[in-house]
Image (cartoon, rainbow, N blue to C red):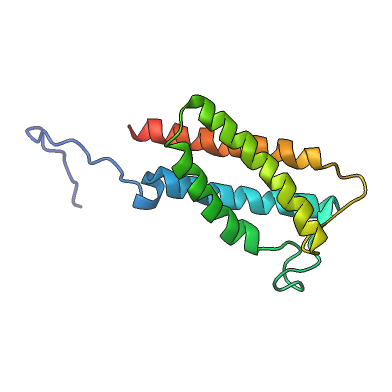
Amino acid sequence: MNIVKHLNGLNSQPSPKKRSRFWNNPTLTTIFLSSILATYLDLFFVGKQMYHFPIRPLPEVFSINITFPLAGVPVLVFVFLQVMSRVNKWGKVGLIVFISLLMTIFEKFSELIGWFEHASTWNHLYTFFGYLLFLTIIYSFYRGLEKRKG
């Protein structure tokens, strides 16, 4: 029977586990989180019949329009994070408010062209406050990763 013994004269420390490069990049991690969060929020609201997507890719497979959460959100969040890194504190607040207002306008526009339909009980202030909360959470998560990375 073989028994492995620790050498007392060996001063080497066990090597720490290294995380994947993907998870070490705060921008990529935040984009990934935002895409997942946007997808689940769409699934939640479609499931609650608050809105639906009459025009969407693969309608027999997906109940949501997967284009926006899987392609649009990552691009927009990347641009959002890049701009947020270049503005001061009040600029960050103003940018989040501006984007929230812009998304409310875009939502109305997408309804007009038939990409999006809301339930009669929907109020567009929900969109404004939803994006305000979403962007704040996403940016807070990003800042937390940045601080942790050091």
